[in-house]
Image (cartoon, rainbow, N blue to C red; front, side, top):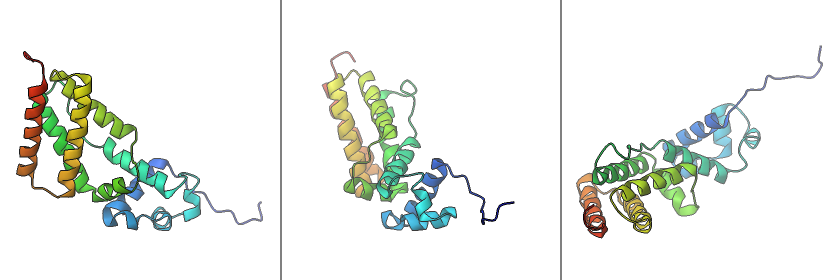
Length: 180
């Protein structure tokens, strides 16, 4: 029989930590995410969190990547390319409106991760199916993502967002080789 006071350890997984962090971020923004609050929410000490994540900044990157990973990607062949681009841009804008802390976080530090890369690669592939060159498709992705982020920052109503995106898409369509 042991004489030391042993307490059962609660097994935590990174996914649980990130989900709890997302809840704090969605409730009160970046300022609401502290290691102490997160530890309290998970029933552990803040110091114990550092066994799972190295810093608050790394946790923000993980949270951002999780949100990007949950953003729906329509199939490349499911819809005409124009409609797919519009849907992807609207999915991005809607995601940012649901998680406004991400807009703030993106202005503080780079939050690029595998899920954002996956989103942008998918959008590039959609643009290439329209007949755009790889270079033009990459520039189109940058323009579309920037526009969707700006529309979310400005909380632009949907009809204006659609008009702006359709104007961008019209410009993209004009760059395609004839016959596409």
